Structure formats: structure tokens, C-alpha cells
Length: 404
Image 1 (cartoon, rainbow, N blue to C red):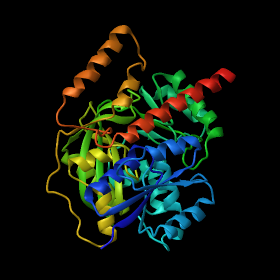
Image 2: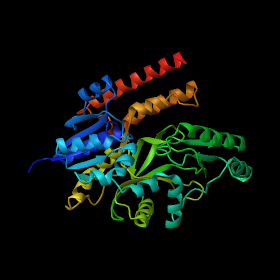
Image 3: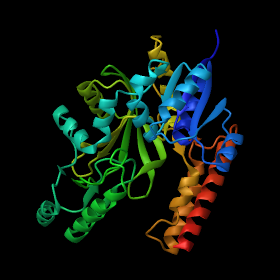
Image 4: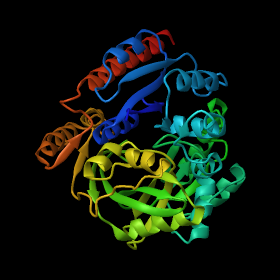
């Protein structure tokens, strides 16, 4: 029996790379990756592709372009693609939107579009959680600045201002007093002029109480609203430091968080992979749901290394074959993104003492065992490509600033 041809869309980043490596680890796949052509830099990325990727295909248009459907159809037909799998935030939203059209040619491993939209919009996520009986931060949906000014007089600080749609720390502002809250709201509204309204929307920001405590995630896999497997992890270090994507994480086992995730999944009858972001409130010990991401996550490789190969099981489920999840996953397994860790060393607040402490913490984390890294010595080329890409991006940014 020949290998399964699977095409990963929006895959040239850590999530896509982790998905590709997970599939190769399972065996039996020929992994294709579709990325947008960005000129000579794309050639560098192709030459330095991961060992887990058999072939990279360049798309002449972006995922938001209407012509993307034509080019994806051609790739599916020409390379006899069996499964199409979106990896990142953008890819999941756009492929879910095209799922009905593309499903005529291959099996599309994307969630239903209507449900993706529900979870992409933080306003509807909060309302869904409330109906499912899942605790969330106190949340306000102001209609205008007058409502914000009224709320600012009586609320407890700090307050978090969030874009209705966004990813990670994108579109999040913090306010410690009324003046900062009103300013953050104004910044969000002003930023809406440059938003597409689909991937990112700051035109109707919501206000939430700040929950003191550590960030925890539940990485879950479900079929037709039934939770099949779930792993919890704790974010030990984030970028930015005040809250964002986890760049140092460790697997844990928290049955309470898994139960809450299972309740939400059952309520909306979710099918596929999904990541829940919780904070365990330091004041009362109650987990509060912050947001739900209807896609693979940055620590997908950690999930796989701990024992749960979700990308492979997505294919198994689509082929109506038995799923494989071990009875237990590995707890206290650490995952690190050293390049991002280095980037936080000069993050504010800054002083010589703080910088030295951050450097010491960075070095000491190498003593952690067991640890997995986004950089694999057996597959180093993607890391080299990322360094080149970042250097080029920094250089171009400096040139633009100089011209301005």
C-alpha cells in the first residue's frame, strides 16, 4: 500500500513544522507543504526545508485571495493529495471557509466553518462558555466610549482590553487605571482602520477583569462532541512576558481543566483539535477560561512527544480507523523555544540586574530534564531558515524606519 499524500497549508512556521514532524513520526505519509511565494526568500526556505517535508509548493497568491481555491485545486489534482490539513491560525480560518469546495477533491481535515467563526470571535466564545456553565473573567461588551468611561469609574483594576478577533497577544492591552483604560480603548478603535475584520478585528473590543495566576492550556482531541484525549500544560514563560504564547511550557495533569474542556466540547459538539487557554485564579483557585483556539497550537510537538499524536489521529478518524492514544501521557516534559527566550531578555522592565537574572534563568533552564526543543539536531535546517528570515525581516524594518 502506497503512502498517504497529505498537504499542509499555511505550514511554514512552528505549528506546521510540528504537524509535519508528527506525521513523519507516525510513518506512512508523504508530506507536502503549501506556502506563499515571497521571492528569493522562498528559495532559501525550500533549500532549507525540514526532513519531515517531502515537497514544498509555492502559492502565487495569499490565502485571502479568491484565486487561492484555483491553485489549491491544481495542487490536489496534480499531486493526488488524499488529505488537506491547515496548520496555522490563518490557514484554519480560510481552509474551513473553502472546505465544502475542496472536499469534492480530497478529505479536508478542517473544522466546520461556522464553529470556527464562533471560537475565533472572543465575544461569542465568552457567551458559549457562560451557557455551558464554564467560569470566565467578568466581561463587558461596551457599545461606545461613553460606556467605557462609565465602566472605568467603577471597575476593579487592572483591566484587559481585547480585540474581538485576534491571535496570541495580538490585540491585547492592559490598563491599571481609568485613564489607561480609555486610552487603550481608543488605541483599539483606531487600529481597526488597518484590520481586515476577518482575521483581526479591534472595532468592538471587549473589557475583561485581569485574572492573577498562571496560564494553563488544555490540548484536546474530540469527535462529534466527545472528548477522546486531552493533555494539560503550564506556561512557564511567555512572549511577551506579561502574557502571550508559551515559549517555555511543561506538561501537567489537571483533571479539573480537562473536565471543563470536555464540557465545552460537548456543548458545541466540537469535532477535531482545539486548545483551551485557562488561568487558575490566584484569589479563589477557580479556573477561568480566557479563550479557545480552534486549530493546532505552537506546542503541538510537545503534545506529540508526550504521547498524543493528534495530527496522525485526525487522519485515522477520517479513515474510520481505530484511534491510538496511550492510557497516560508524559507529565513534567518541558518544551522550549530558545530563540524566543533570547528575545525576552531585553523586554521591559530593563535594568542590568534584571537582564543578568534573565540570562542566568535562560542558561539554568538547560538543566531541565526531560526537555524537547523546537530545534532538532536531527533536523536543523528549518532553524537556519528561521534565523535568516528573521534577520532579513529586521533589516527590512530598519530600512523602512530610516526612510520614514
